[in-house]
Length: 392
Image (cartoon, rainbow, N blue to C red; front, top):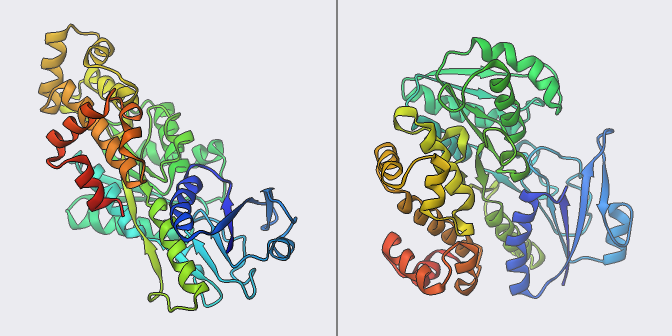
């Protein structure tokens, strides 16, 4: 069987979805052809990479696919639901409001996204929390904001909402609107943004206004777009949607459609993979910035083989003093933090079916024996048993 997979911009989130889809496609013996596309200013789409045609009808005619997967990035509905007549199609991460009888949509559980962000921000125990919406005010943004508001107000905290008046994706234009609002925002405040692009704008506004992140304003975005999150200053914490799981679910749903088996009741949903904690929410006891620098250094470099001594140098303290300051702020040692970070990465890769033999070098352990020992000590079960239980 031949399957066409349409990827929106083929960025980090698209690659995660494709990884999950390929796992199931390989098991089923499907031949997969990837098509990359992007929206155009006129509301349509154009292909960045496609073989066999310059539009969807010509691609369908050339490849004669048995089924199609269309990744929509949650924010664009430029490919019509009825663009694949007679061909089973699953649309991944399409706005729930767009789901209809012409195609099967696999949509994000935006309440789960908001809950993940709220759990991270509420750890700060601030009196005020805010949501900054998508400039285009799309349905998924409204859902995230409403779910976040409910959680905040249920806990007796004050909630604030910001809506953009213009539809723009430009940081400078966002800043022009958001800066006056942020200047008047009560502080300290935890800010949940509709996506990482808006999170970046909030972080830049804080820098321009002289507001310290995360002590005065803690920020969480959505999508874990590494090109944004790792280059924002400070780096941006973000909720990563379970697009790997969505890719697998899309493949299973497509298999049902092609076999003319009934699919589960709509809407089909997928949730959250993890929250990636970066400097924008890295609050520590006593606000010790030396500890924050060490934590950010460990997050970035633990899986590259960084040692406790490396982190201590980052703090600018001698060994005994560095460990004492770090333990006082976090409740555990620098070496504990390094091992927890490495084991966390092992678990993430096991869920993506990466073999254990390949994980030692990728996660900074040096040898499989060291990995197995550290995993069992920190998780309580052997790595193989954990993988068998969770990586399905």
